[in-house]
Amino acid sequence: GEPPEIYSKFLDSLAGFIVGKAGGGALILPMVTMALGFFTLVKSLITVSASVILFDLVLGLVVETDNKDTITATATYAAVLGGFVGTSVGAGAGEI
Image (cartoon, rainbow, N blue to C red; front, side, top):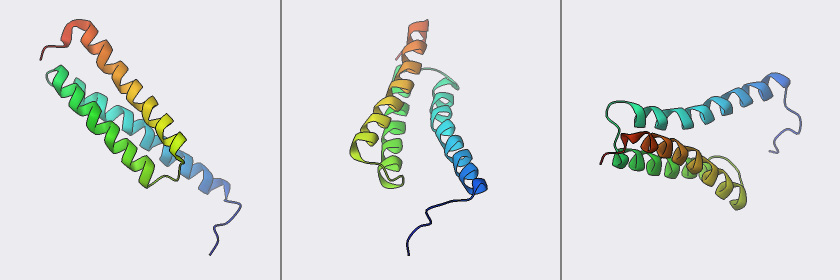
């Protein structure tokens, strides 16, 4: 059948909450992984690469987005994680 055109306010709020928590987790988990224990540039680059690939797969296969939105969201996500790596390396913690 066809999906409904109008959703209940509770269902819309619940969906927003779930998407917000998933988006926050997608940012927090890689940052925690990079920050815990010892910091190396290799560990951070592997973490960022794996996270970006996983984010792109979920966005492309689970969430219904067109190609332009997928590329934009993935590039933005990679930039945020790359900024975290850049500021950590800039602080003098980038030994290989």
